[in-house]
Image 1: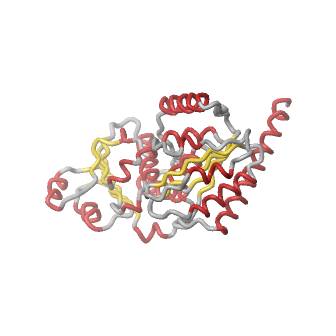
Image 2: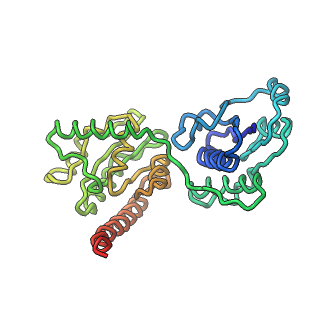
Image 3: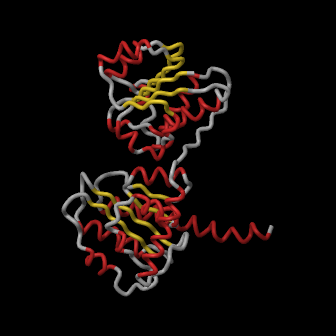
Length: 319
């Protein structure tokens, strides 16, 4: 069975979770058939394949050219799926031969824009699947994260080795708050970031704080300013050693081991939500006192929920 999936080439329209759910369910429904799936999407989606199982696909293309249309036209598909497609992708959708076609347009997508990121992508997948598979069918709409578990374990070993080498406590699950801030297009002033970290420290409870700031601009904030916030704190450490580490698996490891993650990185937040890990996403690029108040309110709430869960565990074990 030959399938073609066309996704809008707009950079801000990545739908890797939707596409992965569609492929996963098509493979489940047609388990007796060998599926050959071709994907046309933008390069950014392919590079951020943590939500997309690339082995689903026979071919992945990141661009289309009008002179290739007729060759593509000869390549008949059993199913063609279009997701928010416009321009050349839309021309391909209508011109290429397909026994069955299903699409969801840009206007229809606007109805679901107010949903959270995961709910939005899950809704897209469900709409497409219902159009493709007419009979009553239960779909598996739980998103997946395709991480290298071996690398996660090895990264944790390296982190603990570095901590031990610096006479610091090893990573201990659910005893820290991880703050991961990534700034490229917009960088708040150092004073605003310091206020945020200060508020987190004062409201952390018994958790230590781990901080990574990834700043792609030249305006790096001096680490001494952070150290001043942590003077006199021995048991709740800030680990400055990891502020310059670019490997994303360091962030993934810290987030996995922490009670709570506070971040402006949408991908890290999605991973946490899929993995059922507590996470707070800074919704806007701007970081000001109002948004800091909101972050602290959410942090207090999540920490109280986590504390209640810990107190319930012994009772459940006794029953």
